[in-house]
Length: 176
Image (cartoon, rainbow, N blue to C red; front, side, top):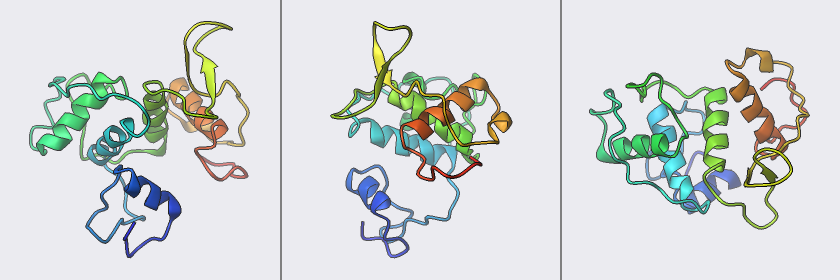
């Protein structure tokens, strides 16, 4: 990836696909926290390589993103259009807040509902034994003992889904 602060193949992959640009041309800053505006950029940059289509990015009514760049405003509006976020409130996105691990699980799970499954991908029926499918795992097993701390049932299910899809890499961990 050309970053001086990490040799991670995962980071090299997201750099290759244009999902990240790094914090500078030569640094990724792997120990930094991720803000909600940064996550919006990651997510929208991931849609194309994942086989999805980005919507227009027309204004979705968030009043707290006007001071951000046009690229950030468009990304935030696009993830709202895709159903990846609903915002912190109906009119605020809170772009400078940090993304929690639970929120990230929700964002990624919702993104997976907007893209098609690739070769060998896990796809399950949305409901019942027939009908439309989405990328998810109906498996409910997991090792986490702290999911009761997740703020909503949707967040708990997103965490379990991503664990069963192999997105979280530490399968022996008991704390999310």
